Length: 189
Figure 1: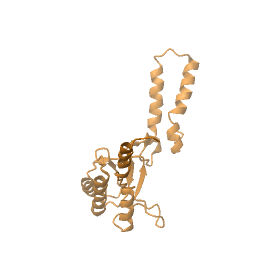
Figure 2: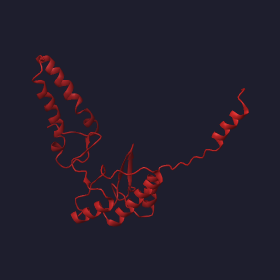
Figure 3: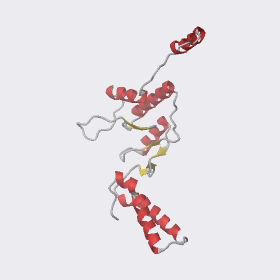
Figure 4: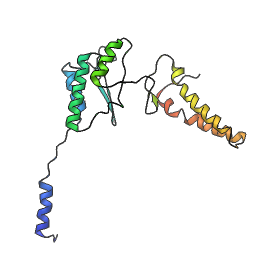
C-alpha cells in the first residue's frame, strides 16, 4: 500500500511483541473448586438441590457458606487470592454480612473478624430494594408509603389545582413503588 518498510517493521513489532494474559472468572472458579473439594458448603434450598456458593451481579458478589471459622478462613483466602491475581481489591468497608438466626453472637463476631466485614445487612437496601424481608412485610415496605407521603406533603405549598394535585398523586403513587412491585408482592395495607 506504499508504506515505507521501516514503518511496516515498527507496526509488525507492535503486533508481534505484545502478549496477553487473561484471568477469566477467577473468583467464581475458585469458589466452585472449594465447594467441590468440600472446603466451603454453600447454601441449599433443599437437600437434593445443588449447593450455591455465590451469585455475581455486575461488580457485586454474594457469597454463601457455613457459619464456621474454618469456612470463613477459606473464603478469606479465596478473596485474598482473587485480589492478588486480579489486582482488584475487595472493599471490606462497603461489604456486609448476614447470619441465620441460629448462629450465636460470639460465633458471628469471630467470623466478622476473620473476614474483616463488620457491617450487617439488616435493614439495608440493594439496588433500591430491601435486602431482607422478614415476617412483617408491612414494616419492610413502609418506606414506600413514607416516600409517597413526603412527596404529597411537599405539594401543599405549591399552587396546584385539585385536578393537578390528583394527577401528580396518581402519577407519583404509580411510579414510586413500580420497581419494588416488579420484584415483590407488597401487602395491600
